[in-house]
Image (cartoon, rainbow, N blue to C red; front, side, top):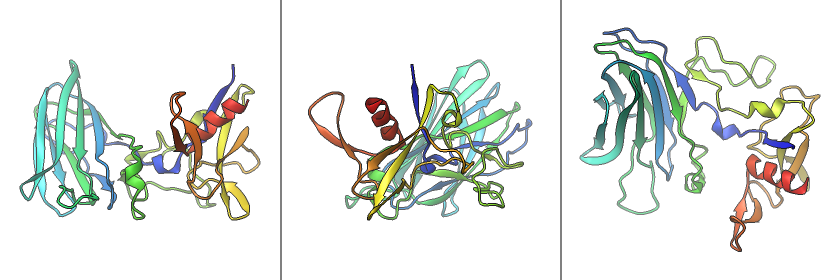
Length: 273
C-alpha cells in the first residue's frame, strides 16, 4: 500500500489559536479574527474549552461595537448589526466539563442587491471566566472550501487569526515549522506534516501550474524547507494558467467539473501510479 499526501495549502494557515488558562473572575487575552472583504461565504470558528459552568464571551466587530454572550449548555444567540442578523453563536456541553462553541458570521459581500452582509476586518474576541476557571481554550477556523469566496478578485483567502508574534519566515527567508514563543496563533493545520516523511510508501505530491511557457510550483502549493529535498511526485494541475484546473468526473458520474489544488494533485498521482 502506498499513501499519496498533498503538500499543503498556503491559504490554510493561521487557522488555530490558543488563549491559555483563564482563572476564575479574570479575562483572557484578546484574540483577533480577520474576515476578508468581498467574501461571498459564511465564516465560522469553533472554540473548545474546559469549564465546569457557564462563561462569558465579548465579541467586538471591526467598527468597534461590542456584544456579550453568556455561554452555557444549549445556548443559541443571534448577532445583529443595525437591526439585521449578521451572525449566530451556539454552545453545547460535550462532556461534564467540556464546552464546544461555534460562532458564524454572514458573508461580507454579496452578488445580490439587498442581501445582509457583515463588516469585514478585525473581529476581537475575549473570554471571561465567571464562577470557574477556563482550561485550555482552543480556537479553530472552520475550513471554507466554497468556490464563491474566491469569485471576487479582492477575496484572497478564507478568514484567519492574527497575532503580532506570529512569524511567516525566519531571518533567512525560510518557512517556519515550529510555533513562535508567545504567539497565540499556532501552525496546526498549516500544511500536511506527513508530506515531509521520507518513507518509500509515503509519497508527497506537489501541484504544478503553467505560466506562459514555464511550468512552476502552483502558487497555493507548499514547499520543502530544505531546498535539497523534493516531493516524490509533481502533477500539472493547472495546465492553462493559474488555478485553471483539470477536468474530472464527480463520483464516477458523467458530469465534468474543474478541479484544482494539492488534493487534486495527490488524487491524480495515485490514479497514474
